Amino acid sequence: MREIVLDTETTGLDPLRGDRLVEIGCVEMINRMPTGQTFHRHINPERAMPAEAFAVHGLSSEFLADKPLFGHVVDDFLEFIADAPLVIHNASFDIGFINAELDRINRPAILRDRLVDTLLLARRKHPGVSNRLDDLCSRYAIDNSRRTKHGALLDAELLAEVYIDLIGARQSQLILATETRDARVDGYGEMPRRIREVPLAPRLTEADRAAHRAFVATLGNKPIWADFLGG
Image (cartoon, rainbow, N blue to C red; front, side):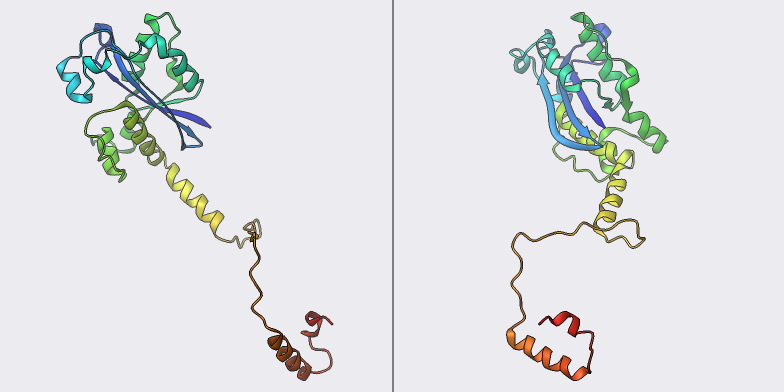
């Protein structure tokens, strides 16, 4: 199953009041494991960066001035996410900004039924406590020391790790890994045998073989070892 973990950075909190998208970061997951494939773009918001937003993500108007407009990256973005479920922390915020940008260029909105909101998942699993991304990283012992400021791709990478723990997928993977490592004893499966590319050199010497034959000769007329000695 393919999923996309997504995060954005913006100029503010409300796209209906003129705030714009300035960064998109996406991480591809297959069967609940990051594949290493990502999508990351900075976007020119065509407006000044408020000081409050700059303090959060550190993206200045000067830095974004030569970045592409959303309309210039939208095809690459939509191709990357395709029809996969979108895993987002506080999904209504990010998808609100993305859909506002899509509306500006007369593109169809992304439907909300494909969203997986990790904030809602976290609130159900950990009610009554703070469930910000930093809190979840601490709770699941995920290293977020690089997160000195918000960044869309970094936050998507951290959220992918959180999501695996949040839904219990990491524990399932560990159990599966243990089962495939250990030999099965219930008769329903066994470990595949590994074959060495270069066989080990035999350690038995001809003197060892001769001594063993001499010993077998003392065991009577039809010792079972004789079936294995050959001529």
